[in-house]
Amino acid sequence: MKPNRNSGRAERMSAQPRLHQRAAQVQQYGTVNLNLPLELEEPVRLEMTEQLNQLLADTISIRDLYKKCHWQVAGPTFYQLHLLFDKHFDEQMGLVDGIAERIQTLGGISLAMAADVAEETQIERPPRGREEVPAQLSRLLDAHQIIIRECRKLAPRASELGDEVTNDLVVSEVLRTNETQVWFLSEHLVAMPLVHATNGEAGEATPSIKKTA
Ligand SMILES: [Fe+2]
Image 1 (cartoon, helix red, strand yellow):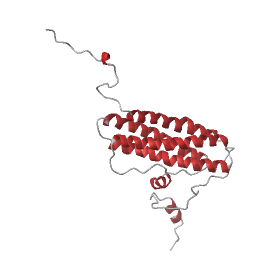
Image 2 (cartoon, rainbow, N blue to C red):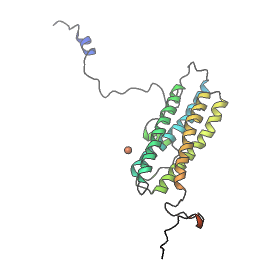
Image 3 (cartoon, helix red, strand yellow):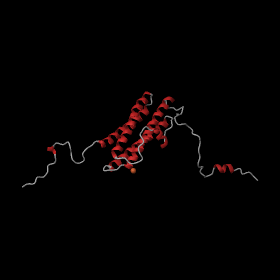
Image 4 (tube, rainbow, N blue to C red):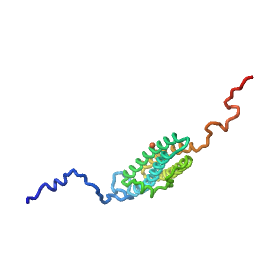
């Protein structure tokens, strides 16, 4: 029987997708590529990627907390908060991508999956069930405070190490966005009357129509 000289080639050219493949990792989490033309030494990039991964885990957590609140919010302010929570979710989504890609740019490995994020985040795990609006808002504000605290620590350290782009990302995008979102949330926790003013002077009240005799 003649050997089929084309059999090997035919196998390589098969249109069959090769499914269920696994392979060894090409880079371990917690490491950075040694040689990159960034003029940032390996120890600097290691420290920055470690701190950025903490910020990433917490930013992914608050992003998902916003979607939980978007879905589960209830009550008279449902519509405005439903929309506001989703707007903040979208903004946090942008931050997640920016932080993750900064880590990769520095030669590191970004956290990505929910199980890994859950192990690393400093944000308190909420219950699966629905909470009332003031508890939702307070929980979100607590999460923002954790992220803002991290930013205020990370930004000057990045500058100190000469990593000005990480400083810029943290200050101009992460910190600025979180501060603004804190403003929008915290104004909802101010107890204001909806119909009857309680602090106005009596003389400023809308005059009622007097019945004439
Ligand atoms: Fe939605």
